[in-house]
Image 1 (cartoon, helix red, strand yellow):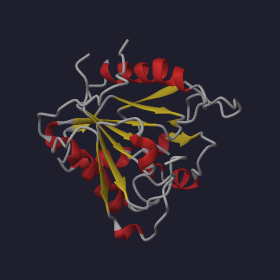
Image 2: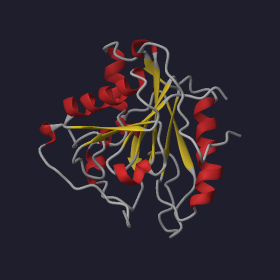
Image 3: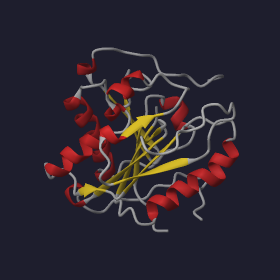
Length: 142
Length: 85
């Protein structure tokens, strides 16, 4: 399991060309596949789980479950927080090398911060590290 | 684990900075829920994504948060402040 530093900025240098790089999205905006289990907004402590979405995911395949920000705009166009269609356009245009095999959505609200920090965040990092073939991760919130 | 370069697009820069993200972009005045622009603003969304990805290729100073102006967004929303600051 990956460990996250509490003391220093975990900066990983990038030494390639953007046009060769595959990009993954990790979003705290509560995005998940329409066919996946919704996040639990009924728990006042939040939901520490996450959902993995595949490389073929489009904006039409996903939805938002999150009750701590107004996601009306994301409901209309999820690219405002999960720019999967944008990445596909950029890949088609040769700006980026491609879309990674995995993208991750979680609900960025929890009162269980230690568990989020010690368990969920490293698990998401491992998820992306294993099999996503991501060279860059784009992080977004709600 | 080799580590993967990350870049954050945040609309709550003070809050995000507390977690010391390696690279981050704040589109000045974007509201919560509009990290990359408003719905249907495809060119703006694309511009913000490209700007964010270029922070990775530029290898900015670790922990640096870049604020950029996007007047085409057409609105300004004050970001959430950290209490006590």
